Image (cartoon, rainbow, N blue to C red; front, side, top):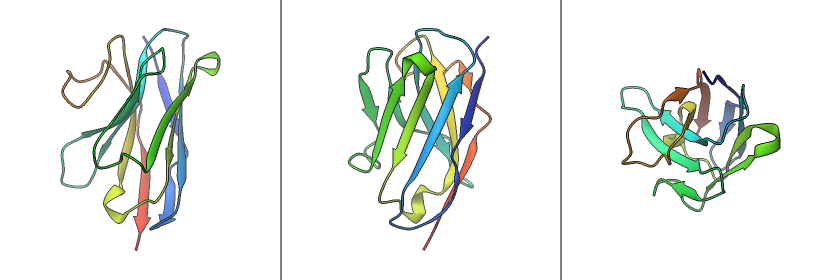
Length: 120
């Protein structure tokens, strides 16, 4: 079983930046990444990265968000720049043996979520 623990959420003004981090409890060659759920909406794909470093992004965050990982630290990051009010959501770290994209099955492992609130 893999446990994921997120950190780095908070309140930021529109146009600002935040960096989320997620640490995995064990050293495994998993794809890792981020999904989010806004109030009243379904959970959606944001960005993921494979063990070897291939990245995938939702169209809504391309050019603003960057996903990266440090395998030695078992950690995945989400650098969020030029934040918009519509980025407000609970952000969930996710991991899976297989590549995760907007169209693949739901990931196997989930973190507890961290709130990101972007004010206007």
